[in-house]
Amino acid sequence: MTSATRMFRTLGLTAAIAVAGLGTASAQTINWDPRTGDVWVDTWLGDINRYGSRYQQPFVDEMVRYYGAPRDLVTGLLLERDWAPGDVYYACAIAQVIGRPCRYVADEWERSGRGEGWGAMAQRLGIKPGSDEFHRLKRGFVSSYDRWGRPIRIDDDLFDDYPERARLIREGRDDRDWRRSDDNERGNRNDNRGRADQADRGNDNGRGNDDAPGNSGNRGKGQSARGNGNSGKGNAGKGGQGKGNDKGNNGNGRGG
Image (cartoon, rainbow, N blue to C red):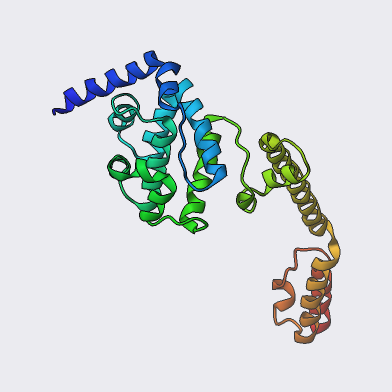
């Protein structure tokens, strides 16, 4: 297949998704059960079905840009191979975690995965429940939802990754307000940092206007001048700055 033919095919599939709309995805997701082995993941994959069916282009863009899936593969899975958006998302997410192309996981799913469910297949590919790899999968959901601007309720085992959202949940508040809370917190930190910087600059200015430290140094030079007579240290040593000059000159006088 030439590059031009592939491009037109991809454009055609993308347009077909937009025309197909909700009806196609709804048919794909009737009695749909991903069987990931995790209730939170199952729940949000179901929501991805709803999002991907209503907002097809942002969904496809997410798979292409952030999960490295070829556009013609994503559109082909949705239309030609009757995949639900949640299945497409999870296949590409698993592929990213294990370092394989999305096409590889999609082929594995069609070969044997449908009969065993996503949970069993993920384990066969090296992603076990509770593992760091599985945790990465779940964090990926949150990142995708943030890019879509769609609210998502984080799972308990993601609290350490998203402390501000976790705090809102513990307080019984809607964690969808986390962005505003984070912004306010950052604003307060910046205000406090600005006040501290201004205070430091003010203290620096105060030290610069304070004659005591400078005079102490000059007095030392002046005393050195007294001991050495006209050796020149009195005149050379900071003589032009404040009282040290007077004492330096006095030292010169005594030395003579």
